[in-house]
Image 1: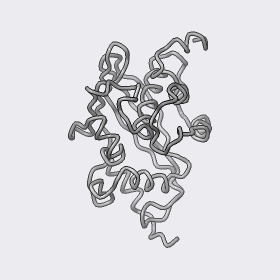
Image 2 (image 1 turned 180 degrees about the vertical axis):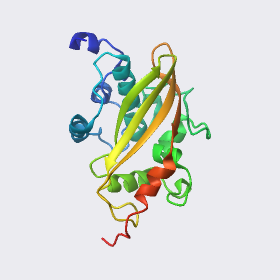
Image 3 (image 1 turned 45 degrees about the vertical axis):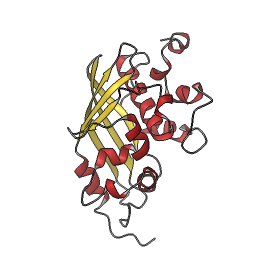
Image 4 (image 1 turned 45 degrees about the horizontal axis):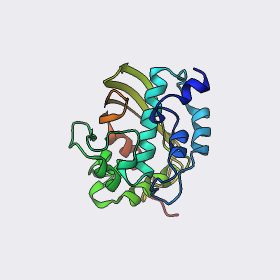
Length: 219
């Protein structure tokens, strides 16, 4: 697909840096837009899948990355271009369906992980949860689409999330290993390819167990 054809696509299925630059009036969580330059560099080095620009796989990957960026950095869901804000719902492993406001207030980590022995979402804020995982994965916790299983309006796809456990996780020292999560999600989209709902399915217990099995950290 030519760059001209790509620029004619809806903004939310272009790359997330284009989405970031789109609206100068966005209410950013940390006052300034996020910088994905290092993340993009790591993705080029570590991605296992290179989807053809303009393919359904590339479009879905762009859409989900745009959503993740907006959920993490835009405090006002009405400014999220990747979703239909007033209808949006998100759930994990058949759990409660959360609104976009819930996501903006509590954070995706807390809504994804819930309460367990290794992590208690009920005791963490958006900022504290982000800090915990940014410390554990200082080079980022990267995401890519593996395969699209069905197209719109119920887009079902496989994905992988991974990062190098090179910083402390709470009181646990880093192991230096690459920790990977594999999952399946269903994104229900409207005719404009904006997300109406997201359902995620993955094993969060094994992910947390790997983080919590390091030696006690005394740094």
